[in-house]
Image (cartoon, rainbow, N blue to C red; front, side, top):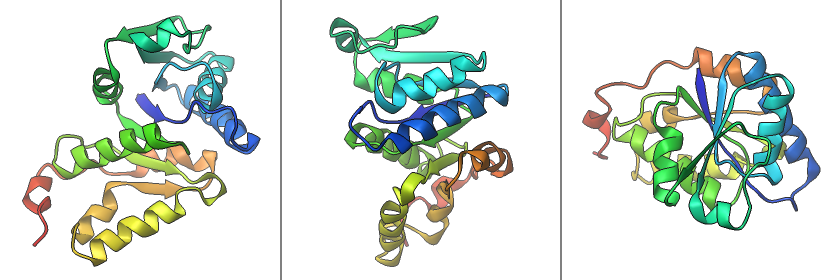
Length: 192
């Protein structure tokens, strides 16, 4: 199983986020899955890679060339793919993934998450999207997305495009329990 992880490169956030990212990396490796992430060597990015590597897991980093030029890459990765730009990075992260996990993060993490959700809505991505709700980080986003349904910008079925868990131990079981998204999702992509 190949799991795409979106997360922050910030070192300034509460250490609990980094600890959670490390434990997630460990859990993914212990499940026999591969971590595919943005290739960064700081913040939650480094922590998830370090956690997986500590358990002998496979980690694939995908990083744009400009980030290599300023040495933002993780120095311990055996598999670091260099791409030309952020758009190619997002495409390569998601392509071939069996699931997406979004850890807390800023605009980059949210952009990647929303692209995955949008592609799922359009029946171009069918696999689980899991929000790891450390310190209730994603609760406001979940409430906002429920408002988009109430205001008729999305259909009620769209709430099922992602799920939220509070604990690392619940991530892999949730991935395994989440059914594949409907192949006919385009039939309800538009709001009626």
